[in-house]
Image 1: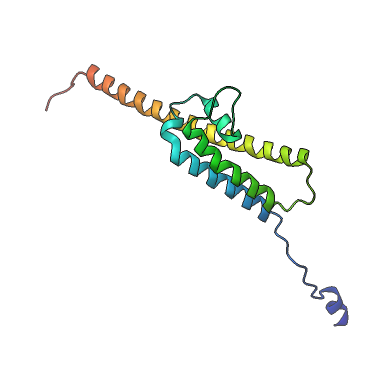
Image 2: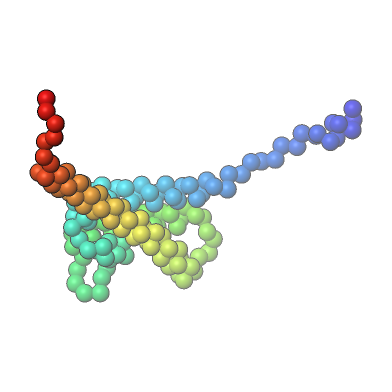
Length: 146
């Protein structure tokens, strides 16, 4: 019996969820993207796809940010700072902090642009399917008798 007790000795190991931080960051990014998209989808769908880039970065080469871009930046900047702070990285120098911020901003830009383009495609699909069904109804001839 002592052999089995030694073999199956209870030795509880602390369980570490290595996905917790990743899920936290992903949820923060997803919530931010949805918040921005829901608040500004009407405007974003009528702007060129590059409109979101200066909004996420907080500036552009020429001119000022539009009020919508400024509002988006005011949501993005504190969220990125919060994500970097929550990562609890020790002693980041400016280059490392910039690199992490760069990656986060490009993720945001990609996700927002993707959602906007999907929304545009759905609008086009809805318009074309309505036009096509109207066209088909106009070109149909009744067949058979009642």
